[in-house]
Length: 272
Image (tube, rainbow, N blue to C red; front, side):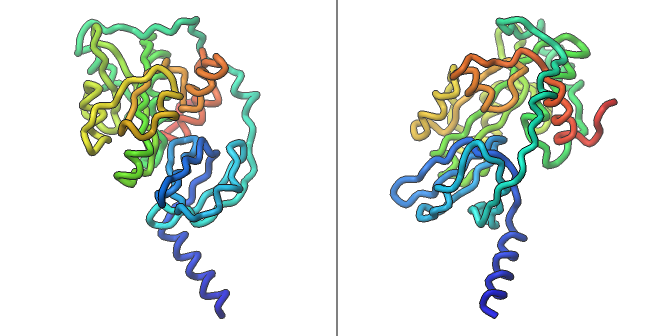
C-alpha cells in the first residue's frame, strides 16, 4: 500500500511538470545552499536542490530524458537512445567563404521588408534557434541577404534571481548602415534596437555586455545578468560557438539535416 501511494505521488509530480529530452551543456553547482543549475544543450534550465546527489551520474555526451515538477526541479531522469545524423549533416546547401560579412541595408524600409517576409506559421513550442535558422536560411536563399544571429545568454545570477527556465535565446540580426537591428518576429512587431530587444527578456532592464567568445559567458556568471554574442547565420546553438572558439570548427554551410529539423520543430508546415 505504501509503495502504491508513493507511485501515485510520483506520477502526480510528473503530470504537473514537464518531460525534456536533451544532452547536457553544463551543470553549474550552487554555493551556500543555492540550487544547482542543469543547463541543457538546446537552452532549457532545470533546477536541482543543493543536497541532491543526482548530478554525479550525469554525463555531457549522453542523451537523457528529464522529468521535472511544477517548480522546474528535477524529479527523475533516464538515458535514451541517441540517433546519429552525422552523415546527413555533411550535406550543405550553400557555401560562403571566410570571413563572413553580413549584408548592409540602405535604410529601415529594407529591414522592415525582411521582417515582414519572415515565415509566421511557427509552432507554439518550437525552439528559438530553429526559428532563427529557418528565417536566415530563407532570406539568404530567396534574396541573397546575409543576416547575422544574435545570442542573448542569461547568467546563473539572473536565472537564480528570477527563476528563469532558459539560459539563451537567439534571433536574426541585420544592419541598417552601421546600426544593428534585431529581427525577432516571435516577440516583436518589427525590427528593434538591441537594447529594446533585450528588455523583452531581462526583467531588471540591465544592459547586456557584448562578448567576443563563448567562454566570456561561461566563465563569468555572477558579475552580469546577461551577455550578447553575434555570429554568422550558419551557427545554430551555443555548442557551435564553443566549438568555434576551442577548435576553430566554425560552420560555413547551411546543413540540410539542420534545416529539415528546424522546419519540423519550429513551423507548422514544411516546404517540399
